[in-house]
Image (cartoon, rainbow, N blue to C red; front, side, top):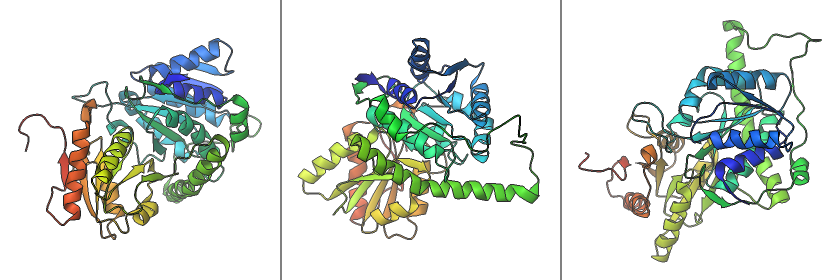
Length: 388
């Protein structure tokens, strides 16, 4: 099929036999819930579609439905995700395997409706797993895999599938949509754990005193850590059934003998891959690391990949206003004991186009750093005017 990224996600939610879809429209996510509403109306999906009065209510409904023992999917973006903030933190601690698509869009003052990762990056410590996709095919596949990861008893955590607003959400690409029977083999019916049952009353999400709160947080931390193994297992099984593999927590390109590389996430990865090919033709040993999961962050895998790398540039499509972007901060911390120079590169803020020249400029800076030359620790690419 030739479909948009939003519609690819909606097809995945349908194939996953989602049972409840709480919804509220917000650009550029609305196409997802609109398509799911059509599936339900046309009898293609047996699910309850629940319009809400706000995104806060959407997540509240999702929590209630998931606690009641059904498979839940929803979608949001930007201000909508921010409005969910309070309820987002209740989901992981209560071990509810909700899957949500977040169509990344800028947030706050000077915001627009175009892509930026500052909405989802602000929620990276909520306990939700976060995967960032490169294209529409990965948007569909990652959504299917998200249900398997979330519902695994070693995990039982919500998963946020993040895709670039407009660049993916509203752009059509060729997408291979699996048959329902294939997906049923990969994703069995949802078997709830510790669900609400009127015949076995229980209390969920109470106020917890100091006697228990720390242990609950520790259990959540362990669940996030256990998800690393599950993510790799699910990726492997998906590749056997559908012929597509994504590398688990991260993927690499031409890193076997690379001296310098960029780490990217989202749609910028495809552009970086083209620049790597150009640099290789020039005889330069450039490579690429594709970060898929921001949570759990692949500390161990990143150290292994960068062990012999002289310099690594880190792409950020968001700013934490502390000298660099959130991905740069995470990578620099992960590689603190690895002899690799790490530089930050901010671009595409507010949905600004990232051109080949911008990506080439990032690689040029990282190459200079690999030779021992002094470069900025963090560079903003594509700024207009004289900005120092």
